[in-house]
Length: 396
Ligand code: SF4
Image 1 (cartoon, protein in one colour):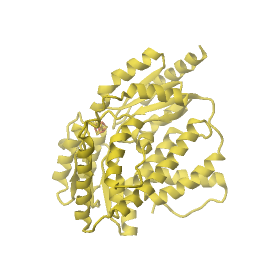
Image 2: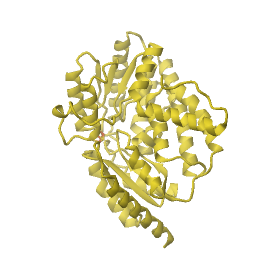
Image 3: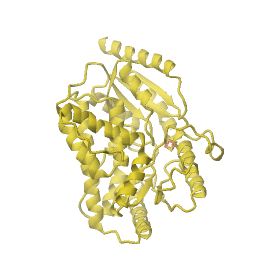
Image 4: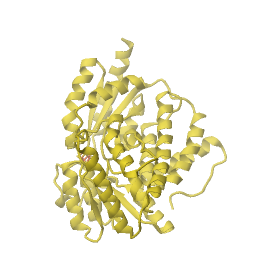
């Protein structure tokens, strides 16, 4: 079992223990989920990023886990998926073909990009015994009919989960799950606030471990650890005066740790982000009163106002305007865009972000990330140069 009950007596030791537990789950999400299933006897449902709420699967008595890319090279999956699919899709297909998802009781798919549609078909073909709950959420989220469409999709998903478990899911059960998820999100946002204000020192990798483990772990267990962590972090030393950077992009899957670590190694400090395995995942809460279907629908349609998503169409929101405002708000001295190679939705938006930051004279660095090995030495030189420019720009 990944989470043992070893408790360190001193506060600093306990802080390290909690962060180490989050790191262990983030490093081996499927191992945690398998152990959880064995120990609890509950179902485990795999969720695809980025728009389906885990609350419904939780209310159905299951552990919802956001399926993650792993670090293994894509081997047996290579023949089934296009080379120009992003690393997330290729890794997911490879894991499915390696039998890694065989223990899942269902997989919940959305169609938020064209590549995921292909992945859904491949997985259906290779896991014929695993129920695939495939739902299409409306992508034009400011359309007049968006609310009705979204309500319909969530009602359908609700029914499918009832069919899967053979039990009714009540409104109260869903409201209870929403409350549990909201509490977890609020605590992580609190950590973000503390980091933005420079009151605590957490690296980009540590922040990713916190969010990624929240995507996997039993929410109440994770929340209990977060409550302890927040109290202990207050007593931790504040962040140093390194170059403050904002991380943006990297949809669907977690950024590689060596890339995140490079920021600190080269003299920077991450003060905020809009990464999916970051603030994007916890930015918006769901209302805990009234009809849960309505509340979940509003959550889906309005979370774009918290952080614009390039996979959704909303004519009143521009990602670049959001980023400029966030960089100002967080006091960041520069922006690092992490782009998953072949991520079409991100590629469409990037030119406008680049232009907007150039117009404002704010340094930014774009790093295209690969699932496979990356040339870290060359990347280090680019990172050092970027941080030096950001430092000099502030001094000037
Ligand atoms: S990272 Fe981009 S291309 Fe890959 S699944 Fe997500 S949205 Fe699609």
